[in-house]
Image (cartoon, rainbow, N blue to C red; front, side, top):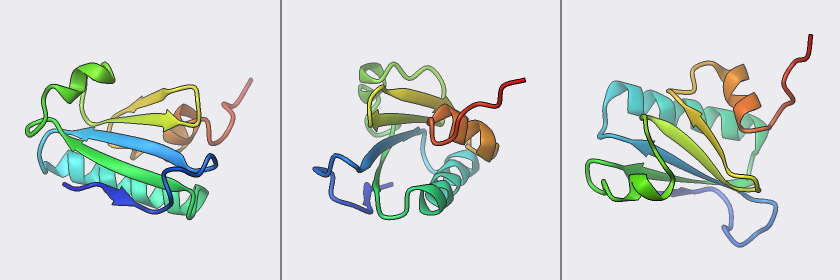
Length: 105
């Protein structure tokens, strides 16, 4: 899997996202498809996605403290956020990325 760039990484309004996967498994492919759909709906033109295959680059897991895959890491804007799973629960992914506020009772 290669990096995918939708916007200029130097732009401060651009969200920098990194998706950690382990090969091209169905769950990894689903996570990428879900992430692309979420980004197009909520960050159109304001995001970059970097896909890191831990089968090819296992040492990269340590820098972002990856303990499960797939894991999405929001590098920018600060603070760094992590969402584990295939992102099929869109509401949970949006809250985890802080794109929408969590519902309060």
